[in-house]
Image 1 (tube, helix red, strand yellow):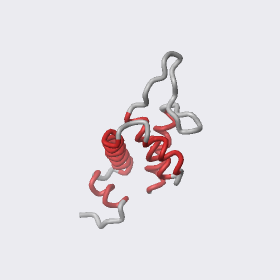
Image 2 (tube, helix red, strand yellow):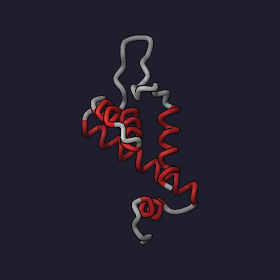
Image 3 (cartoon, one colour):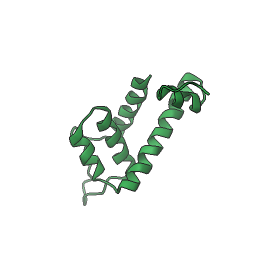
Length: 103
C-alpha cells in the first residue's frame, strides 16, 4: 500500500519533468527558482529512496517553511488519491498507512 503512494509521487515528479539529478527543469531564459511543489516532490522522492544528496539539494530550493507546506500538501493529495482509488475515507487510509487501527 505504501508502494502505491510512492509510485503516485514518482509519477507526479516525472510529470513535472524533473531531470535525472533531481533538479527542477530550467527555462530557455533566465534561470527560474523552483517552486515549493517541485521542491516537495523532489524531497519526498529522495527521502523514499534514501538519497541524502537529493534530500539536501531539494531542501535548498525553498525555505524550510515552504518545504514543510509543500510536503504537507503532497501528503494530503496522496492520501486523497489513494482513498479515492480504494473507495475508503482519507482518515482510514492515513491511519492504515501509519499502521494505526481504523478509528
